[in-house]
Each structure stands twice: as structure tokens, then as C-alpha cells.
Amino acid sequence: MMDRVLEKVVTGFSWICATVLLGTVFSIVGYLLVNGLGTINVTIIFGETDPVDALLFRKQVFDGLFPAMVGTFALVALSVSFAVPIGIAAGIYMAEYCRGGLKRIFSLVFDVLAGIPSIVVGLFGFSVAIFLHNYFYSRIYPCLLISALSLAFLVLPYLIRTTQVSLENLPENIRQTAPALGATKLQNIFYVLIPRSLSGIASGVILSIGRCAEDTAVIMLTGAVTMVGVPKSVFSNYEALPFYIYYISSQYSDKQELLSGYGAAIILLVICGLLFMMAFFIKNRLTYHALYRQ
Amino acid sequence: MDNEIKIKIDGLSFFYNEHRILNNITAGFPENTITAIVGPSGKGKTTFLMTLNRLWESISQARIEGEVEIRFGDRFHKIYDSSYPLSQLRRLVGMVFQVPNPLPMSIYKNVAFPLKLTGVKDKNMISGKVETALKRAFLWEEVKDRLTDNAFSLSGGQQQRLCIARALILEPEILLLDEPTSSLDASAGAVIEELMLSLKDRCTLLIVSHYLDQVKRIADTSMELSDGKLHEYPNS
Image 1 (cartoon, rainbow over the protein chains, first blue to last red):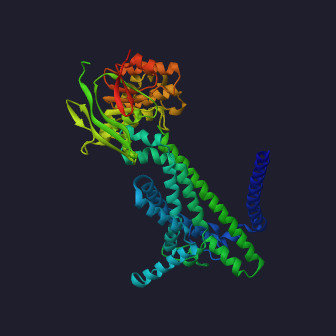
Image 2: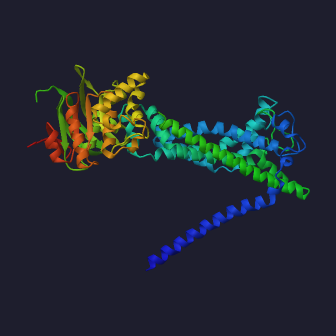
Image 3: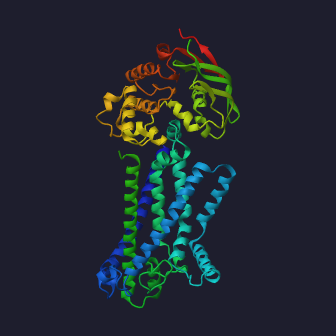
């Protein structure tokens, strides 16, 4: 009798939690859309400059969101391309090669890395930039490259952990199939184990993409500014959407500027959505080519 | 038996977490015969098979004592010698598992997989060998028109024959089969039994089986593994 009541209570509680979660997501997105959708037009993105000129990088945009969009996109692309190869390789090492005491030490180190607050990572990036400026090359300042490297540092533990866990969770009979046919350890990893773990690895990559696109604390200290236009090189300052949102919400002088912050938030969500879809698509194609193509 | 000895085992003991699973086994297996290994469950029959292709080495708390020698060509090789290449050993000693384990690829790619591992690139040679292997495994007629289909679309018995074809494509001299018919129904099992008999002329087969009537039907010799020791099992 008590069991039945308990089961109903737990089921009801689960439903309430799910509803609260969904409700929160819809409220946030709804609030953004209600306030910001009206502001999305060509002017808010390109300002006074002609869109075609801006897209071809012939003219700079200083009063629109376009440079921040380009900056965010470049930042995500750069940091993910640093973090993904290293993260996946380290995950493979942890799952397949590392054993015993060394594995415990590395696990601890990666867990500590995962727990470092993003502002501390930003401070670290800033200190590295100052150090390089003073001792190596005085033209180095906090810039796109330093931000990308700091962000890569931030998301590396997640990539390592998801890769390691997806590989370790493969059942023993799958692990033994290729070696029984004469595969070396490396062949087993590349031809059988990795293709099987692609779902898990892809979810780690998608998590990293989201993290890199939205993090503000790190980029604030390592090169994100306002009103510089599209970044000229990886060694220059740049604009970014999360930083713009932070800046506008603390410095706005009229209602229109605040509304442009909402518009920026919507655009950031759309960019994240597009990046996720791209990662998903790439993962499906990779799985297909790795496993099924004749 | 008049055939020459193919596998020589001397003083073989296997330890897992310091529990003695196999106890000082000495035995010889003649060439081109089917030897059945019977015995109570969980007492080391699969472990025993794995000592012949060194597949147990991925398990970290396991260790082994004793010698295993296999005759390839005209002389015996100590397969646990560090100079003997592991992947080479596993090409000459094939293994088929209890539950069929096709890779998530097409039928053709599954059978061709071991060739890909050895680096063979000649497409004509590969398709010739795939056809031969599937014919030896009694599967060619059933799949020849759908080689690009996903291997998982086959029935259980067909998947097991696919795994046998995959194990045969490198022309191994020894084939280890771990309860090959226990996950299949009687008619599928009968096809596998006929298949195993047909492979005798080119392979030496060691089969773990729980079905004593199967053992009576196809095995030349039977051995029972109990208390970590291997005894002759009367095949009457």
C-alpha cells in the first residue's frame, strides 16, 4: 500500500520537475523573443554600412552586431579546433593506454581542471598575454588567439571525460572482436572502438561548442572589446556577442540600446543552434562513412 | 590418432587474481581433427581457448605459467615468446565466439575486414577471397545478391556463419570455437555442425560445447575440463 503511494508521489514529483524545467526554458526564450524579435532587422546587424560590402569584408561595421557575430564564430572555430584533437587524443590515452597510479593522478588533475572557475581561467590567459608581451614579443596583447587558447583550456576536461567514458563503456565482446582477427591495438581503436563511441564523443564536442560560444568571463579578460569591427588577424582585438550583451546591459543609455541587447541574445542562440546542427550533421556523416560505406 | 600433433601444451596454469583457473595442464592436439572440450560451466573452458590465441592478455589481473607451442610450417613455435608477433598468431589461430559479433558494417565489409587489417588493397583479390570464405562457411548462396546489406539484417544462424567466414578469410590453420551453436536453434545449429566437419581437412578445430550429443556427432576426441585439469572424455 505504501509502495503504491510512494511510486505515485515520485512519478508526480518527476513530472513537476520536468514541467518546471521546460517552463523555465520556454520563459527565457519567450521573454527574449517577445522583447527582442522586433529589433532584428538588417540595421541592427549591419548598422549604416551596406550589407554586401560588410559581408565581403570590404567595409567595416561599427554600429551593428555583425563584427560581434564574426568574432564569436571565429572564436568558437579556433578554440574548438585546438581543444577537440587534444581532448579526444587524451581521452583515448586515458581509456586505452593509461593504467594504475598514473591514471588516478591524471583523473584527479583533469577533475581539478574541470572545477576551475572561468574567471580564473581568464585571469590566467591575461597573465600569459602580459608575460609574453614583456618577455618575448612586445606586440602581443590579449587577442583572439589568447582567448581561443584559454577557452580551449576551459573545455578540455569535458572533452577528455566524455571520450574516456564512451570508450570505457564499450562491452568486452566488442573490444575483443578485432583483436581476435589480428588487429593491433591501434587498429582496434580506429576501426572499431572510435566509430562505436562517436555518439558520446560528439555530445562532448557539442557541449564544448556551446561553452565556447557563451563564455563571457574568459573573453572579457583576454581580448574581447567593443567597437573595433571585424578582427583583422588572430593577434588582434575582436568583438563577441556574449561580451556585447554584458556591455550593453551594464552601459545602456536608452531603451533602444537595451533592446539591441535582446536582439544580440537571440542571434547568439541562433548561432549556437546552427553550430550544434553542424556538429550533429558531421557526426552522422562520419559514422556513416566509418561504418557503412561500401 | 595418426595425425601429427599440431598444438603442444606443457604445464599450463592460468591465474586470475591469484585464483588458479587452469592447473598444470599438459596435452597435445592432432592436426586436422575436431577436439571437443566439455565440462561444467564457468570452470575455464573459454579461458583455455584464449590461452591459444593470447586473447586473455587484455585482462589486467590475469597471468599464465607454462608453455604453449604450435606447429606452423614444419616446426613448433613458442607462441608466448616475446619475439612472436601477436597479430600474426591471431591470423593463424582464428576464433569464433558464442554470441555472433558482426561489426556494424555491410556483409562484404565484415568478411573483408581481416584483409583490410593486413593492408591488402587489391580489390579483385579481396572480392575473390570474400567469395571463397563465404562459400566455405556455407553462406554464399544466401547472401551473394545482398553483400552490401547491413550484417545485422541477417538471422542469428547466418550471423554466426558470417563470423566463421570472417575468421576463415585469412586461412587460419587452427579454429577455436566457443559454444558456436548455443545461441542458435536446432536447424541453424545443424548447419554449423556440418560446416565444422567440412573444415576439418584444412584446419584443426577445438570446440567448447555443452551439447553432448553434438560432441558425439562431430568430435574425433573429447576432453573434459574440470578442477582446472583436462582429462580424456570417453566418446561413446
